Image (cartoon, rainbow, N blue to C red; front, side, top):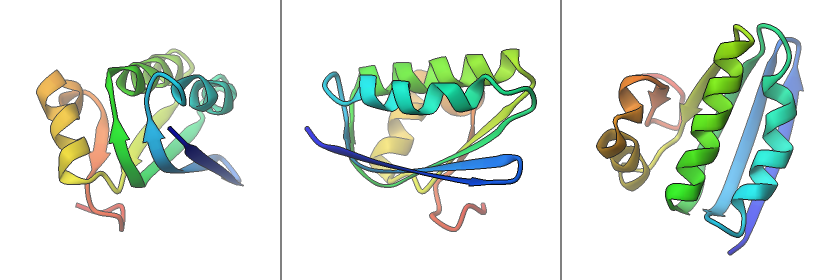
Length: 109
């Protein structure tokens, strides 16, 4: 039930490195930390999930919220470093069809 959140800002792009678990206990912390970065016009957000070992539906809800906020502000979000398990969550829910997801930790597909 722990999460580590490291935010790195470079020019117009913000990278959020996550480690640990994203669940009902940690999702509010993620939402609180990440949401302000989605409200800037044209923001570019990269979220690295390579060190996330568990995520439940509450975590998915946070990503949907971030995605909607970025879209409303003409921004973009890219999820990188997803394990097969996390990628499957996004596939099953159909979110992989609307979100920019790169499962390799290098960020390229």
